[in-house]
Image 1 (spheres, rainbow, N blue to C red):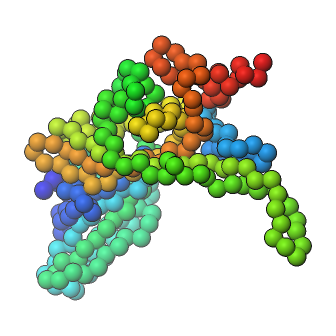
Image 2 (image 1 turned 180 degrees about the vertical axis):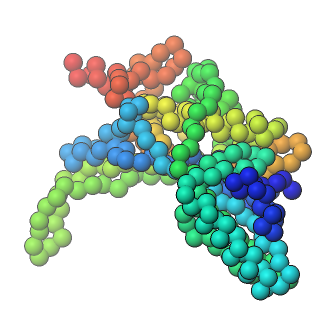
Length: 305
């Protein structure tokens, strides 16, 4: 079992043993998820369908993320376990002045503890504990694979080159909720102009790499791709081409590592700006849709002249 450290001290110095996160072989979860955006992300005009997303570089801001350590406090009895749990809490109180490092073989994160720690006695002196750490600033840098004008993928990059294998798409056939303009009615429900709101759908992918370093490189590449200014062009196996952006980040779960591979599942929720018709869009040599600085396709702009 790998060693885990809090502010340079091994968890075992507090008699805390590393456990396993749900559906994982590691003791931490959340460390590979992309945080959601913060601030105003898009605007809904009452007289227009869809939304106007804010996708310029100076409009992209991101929240922090939660990283949870799953472990067990080892005592000789229920009373001893209780004492060790509270002794650890007192140590955490000494770290309340700012961020401190959470470290293990899989990475290094500057964190603090804000949410309640969940602990419960199991048996024979063991107490299960879940410690939620908060990483307020997440490094979203990474290397984006080159575009190959792939038939399926994102921005001309195939899902394979992105390190992704699609498992399930959900909600891509749905119609989003309509938004109504304000009105006043007496004695009956009433009605007003209704325009389509933001359409969202999700895709679950499987990531499998030979080494943890390669697995982490895939995640970092997705960080860089989805935090890049502008909209993304998504080509799906249902024959559609969609202009999308990411507002809720993505979650990575079920991370497992063994001698020969590291794998896990990633769930991405896409916010759709519009569905594109690939036969009447201006594209560059890589097959990417040409847009202006507000992410409006040039084809749509030219139609106004």
